[in-house]
Amino acid sequence: MSYASSSQPKALFFDVFGTTVNWHPPVTACLSSHASAILSSPTTSIPSTLRFKASTTSWSTFALAWRQSYGIFTQFHSDHSNPPTKTIDEHHHDSLVQLLDERGLKGLFPPDQILEISRVWHFLDPWPDSSEGVRVLNAQGIQTVALSNGNRSLLSDMAEYAHLPWTHILSAFEDFGAYKPSFKVYLGAVEKLRLDPGECGMVAAHLGDLKAAKECGLRTIYIEREGEENFSREEIEQAREWVNMWVGLGEGGTEEVGRRLKEGKQSG
Image (cartoon, rainbow, N blue to C red; front, top):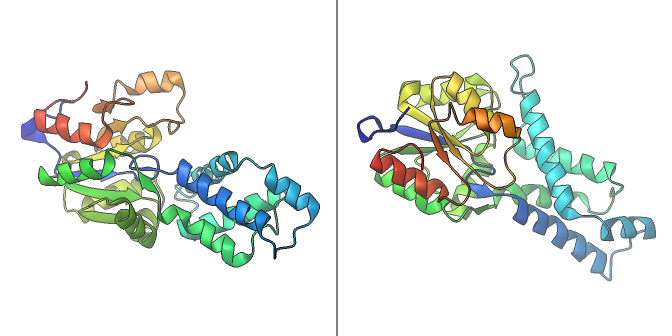
């Protein structure tokens, strides 16, 4: 399906984690800096086994596991038979506690510091093209909507920190009582804007997100981001047949989306 200028979407719903913000470096840096501060503090007494464990932990790997726990959590609660009962902020806190325990790091951080670390997800850096890309789309008269599993306070903090000028912010859990990829989220978002599904597009770096949106009648825009896709190589190739616009790695991300929509193109 082409995005000819006469049929540009009236609204674009954006996935946030991984699509518009680059979560891995800041989350890793936060974990690492807090651990270093604890280990180097002259006033903090740490058992030798815990000190050794903390000093040899790969916080980059830990951050990946933390992110993976989010995917497992939201996927489980996207099923209508398992409605969510807590926010992403609460999940980030609880899963951090669990991961520290599982990796022999229980007791490294006091409770107040665990809470502080868990809020790093509020303050993630945008991809270089995200802020300007959203601004350009707004200028083209397209509503840009953060449609994320994150809670509203998290998304508002992130929008301010990362300079993402969304026209609307929608929280899957708080606005629709579900988590993506539940159809309730996509169809609820469309209804919230008083539009038809075909007048809207979903923008994501995750084909699972786009597949669910497409099944709800939305157009689909894929922005490839390094390390974000979980589909197999075969599934990725198959997806090229049904994704409406495919912005490959290094092709300009969100800014390229605006350029192609303005020129009526669907792919490079």
